[in-house]
Length: 250
Image (cartoon, rainbow, N blue to C red; front, side):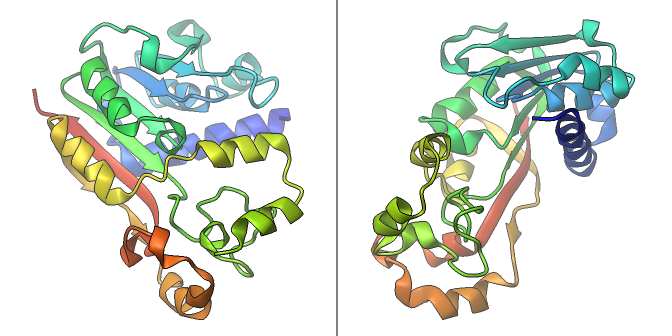
């Protein structure tokens, strides 16, 4: 990852937060970013006025050198208010109710147990605090495989759901890192996520999930290639991403 790439990730995180979390929720808040990657959400939170921000990720070197300090300085952010932790969030203990805001930005689709992921969020968040769950693309959407460099939406949408996908995958010469990330995807659907949220005593403040207009005609063109027996519902094929702002009830 280059310095410019790292800066772009922070700009993307800033846009996500500005669009999905009210500014007053972040100002003066204690923020936890689960699956923080290079720390872009941590920097973005501090840039928007968070009191402190903690990021946790399973692998601090997954994207190579993160340029965290350099990028933070470029954005005018003091990293003395930031902590980055390399650890398994499922085995890491945080103070109950210790955070005002929890971010789960492009992470929940990669964990083996998304229901427990939501429960962890509920435990770490104070009553009345908010969590942003954003994931794109969902597994059953057109490029839900996350292997878009090998399988473009324009030519092979939903390819990972085709009857002959394993053969196509073997012929695509996908690098081991990409294969691992594909195999770990948990196939979470929007409906399942909403069930987990309700079960963990959250309420949905805002739902900005997206169903693209381009998907229905695309589906009609490629439906004959898809193994519909492994698809939970046709609606799941049409939902590209989830953006949910939720609040902890008690």
